[in-house]
Image 1 (tube, rainbow, N blue to C red):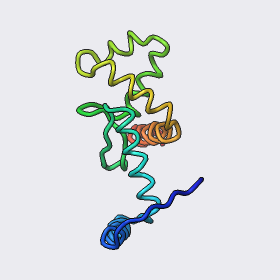
Image 2: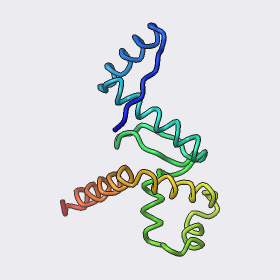
Image 3: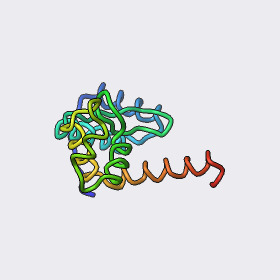
Image 4: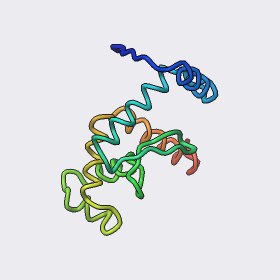
Length: 128
């Protein structure tokens, strides 16, 4: 992975290093994640990020997580009208399309969350 460097004031460098240490991340890992999230929110304005018991994940503002939307899409694909209808009137179709576009750009992230959910479902049902 290529690297980028930037200059920041001492106070900011110290503050960032302290913040990431407190959160169990190295500054380079944390800053990369923040940069990716910023890029995603600029590119897909319907997307935001939220921490939870499953970790940090992409979601639609005011709506479901992207991995949940993708799970539903996989049941309806390629019928986009039926897929949009599944969420109607609660989620705007344009937001759903942004979630799918986000998932295309970050497939490993979304597939990992879907797999994690399937493992949990098997565990809860006594099959895991």
